[in-house]
Image 1 (tube, rainbow, N blue to C red):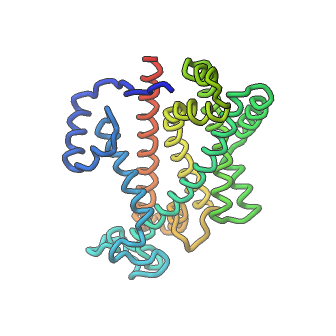
Image 2: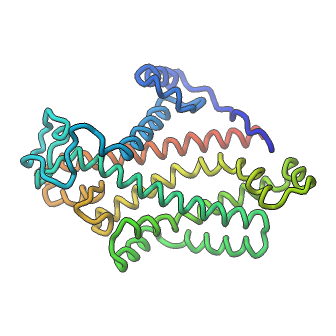
Length: 307
């Protein structure tokens, strides 16, 4: 199997280098993220995603954080001195910060499971299509083209409207719509790797098709999959937030960023800070995932130019 090695990257600008030094000084643990050649913004994005995942996993154990479903105090937009009052309270007195943090768990759960469904299914279909071609390729291409031709948000909205909003329905439908993209990436990667020397050598040594696909080709597909995954995950966050905003997402009173924005629209003209927390969470999360997607895509492009 070929050694992917270190993918060369362009040297950072002086401003990026200074920002990277500042980030590493402020967050020494960011060096363990292992992002060679990353700029300061990319380190910040990676650190934000790590913190977001930790919050999603351990939000129940944050000391003093109240329930996101129960009133905490009087309706107030003014930041309080306590943890639960940092972003104020909503129209029925619930802590906005608590709901934003628990909404992160909801978003990360949907993104993680939907991405797993799409990645595993798309990888399996794409590897078969790229390795065997013929009938498998025609079927996979037809399926991927059909998904690409559909307006995903409208189809998901219609499907959820018929079946009723639930976490399981949203996860499955969102996962299905990303299968085509992963299948295309996997198929292209398998086609480009199938005639490499290490694959031909493995075949000459009597390796089975399954071994060639799993042990030889699959590891070399990881860079391309890693490059597209963050961008697709950002799209899932936007779609889930849109569904919740339209009332077809996570059923109330469970916290979700889109649902928090929707519930505040009637009061928005008088109390605009009500949506500050969830909007900021969506913007930062989507920006962080897109930034990491650009970083991995750039490293993949540099590797391909050198090969």
